[in-house]
Amino acid sequence: MLEQCRLCPRECGIDRTRGQLGFCGAGEEIKIARAALHFWEEPCISGTQGSGTVFFSCCTMKCVYCQNYPISTLNQGLVVTVEELSDRFLDLQKQGAHNINLVTPTHFVPQIIEALKLAKSQGLNLPVVYNCGGYEKVETLKLLKGYVDIYMPDMKYYDDRYAVEYSSAPNYFATASRAIKEMVRQMGKPVFDENGIMQKGVIVRHMMLPGLLFDSKKILDYLYDTYRNDIYISIMSQYTPMPQVKGVQRLSQKLKAEHYEAMIAYCEEKGIENAFIQDGEAADESFIPPFEGK
Image 1 (cartoon, rainbow, N blue to C red):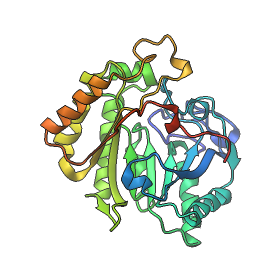
Image 2 (spheres, helix red, strand yellow; image 1 turned 30 degrees about the vertical axis):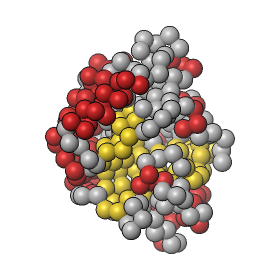
Image 3 (tube, rainbow, N blue to C red; image 1 turned 180 degrees about the vertical axis):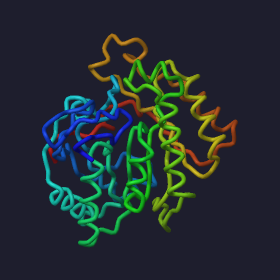
Image 4 (cartoon, rainbow, N blue to C red; image 1 turned 180 degrees about the horizontal axis):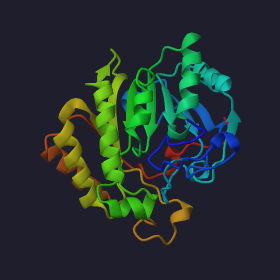
């Protein structure tokens, strides 16, 4: 698959085994920026013991406002082998993680599957979370059936203008819609354990951006009208203006509190119950973990 890489909608077709780099910037080797317990996910993912998150370097999107910019765009991180990645999974299980949380994993799917096979053969028994930007190919998602238990994609934009301007991702909504349909097909209805920790299901995240309340409402309409209570929707207010967006229209400011409150009210008016919301001052860099190779 890496010899003519078409894992994501970019379909670069380059030979990563010969050192060629496509849009995401990932080569043949796996590169990760952090593997540690993470406590800032949704309650049914982080629980009380933390989510065993592995942050992968590089990204198939180029969101100008990305909160993980040093690893997603500058591609900082450490190279690990399949065996070493498998060991990270097992170590996180030993630390008491509720799950293994793969963050921006798309461009390393073949290697991740091999690492999961190896870890499962050595006792890994935690749910696996696929935490992605939503810009996914159905064909790649089908490879993950049986290896992933929880899908946690973003649904970033309804209007393609914003997808192109802010993430260089043409046809984002159509692409993400097809991807989420496949995720729901694989997972079915959400399943939780006795402690309220998700074991199987789909959580679609939408981080509201400044000035795009109308676009956010269209996304909410689509998700709820299409899937009702078969998915959970996470409506996030944590947008944090990073240094790289200084001077960018709309994005250099925080989300207005009244816009987030209006979105929550809209959610309630529609009768949505399976949703997560953020309280208080979420637009803070405390939600962004340090990427120091830990």
